[in-house]
Amino acid sequence: MIKRPLNEKLDIKLMNKLISARGISGDEQEIRNIIIKEVNKHATSVKVNKMGNLIVRKKGNGPKLMLAAHMDEIGLMVKNIEKYGKISFSTIGGIIPDVLVGERVHVCGKKNKIFGVITSDEVSNDMEITKRIESHDMYIDTGYWKPKLKKLGVEIGNYIDFEPMGDCPCHQKMLVGKALDDRIGCYVLIQLLKKLKKTPFDLYFVFTVQEEIGAYGSKSSVWDVEPDLSLVIDVTPSDDNMGESSKILGNGPVLTIKDEEIISDKKMVNWVKKTAKRTKIPLQLEVTDVGATDALGISVFKAGVPTTVIGVPIRNIHSTFSFAHPRDINNLITLLIKLLKTQPK
Image (cartoon, rainbow, N blue to C red):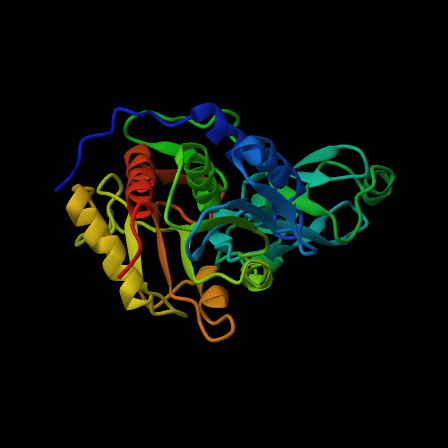
């Protein structure tokens, strides 16, 4: 059953802050500082571990429940600078090369960001394109030659950000912006921190780093928490423009039963399904052979941690702009609030 939009709207000001913030894997400081400001007064403790994960505790009596969402996003890094200013790059995260040509980027210099456009020899020189352009054939054109770029502090290893849209468009039907993977998860955890009062858990909200390149943040932060149970809040590709669909924008949160690397704990899956049924919140189910999340590193900690993944479907995942439905995000927050009033049996 498709639910009508909830009366509560998204906090679009907060969502804009999260989506527009810098936070490529390994460079999450800006997004982390924004989240710290949002959660400080709602937490029992706030800690940043050595790897950069943000661990926020809301102390309670009961088993330790770790809720994880990753702060980092996909992006690029300077690999080489040629004489006439071509900046070749390395991709950070699973970016589809086809979406890159023509994208506007900001190359991080010593003090300022330098605007550039991703192009290739064929595109730049109006040549016929006879084969697919791979990422190693692309480069960034800033209009500057190498000596000027050097003066501006551009060197190998500098990060390259995709240009944010500005204020992300949002209406009852669609939310659009960069880094929805997984700033939506960060938004959900922030809202839970603000709304939850008392639960039968000792809650740890963990905003992880470097998920996009191997889920390294969750693998380190789980040692700080040592949880009894875990819920990973992430996004998943929608397939509602592919004919027969199982993950449709607007039809509710998605519970991942299996992905490429994890089979969710049965007890956790049943807990989520029964809560959704009891509270009449729409829930979509996912079994997939591709993709992975922070769940793997958490679930195999020590003797094992019962874990599952729940999130929302989005279109254009791992591209510079994605689409999500505000209704799914609000329904996910409501479902999690109801869920955390009980313990799994």
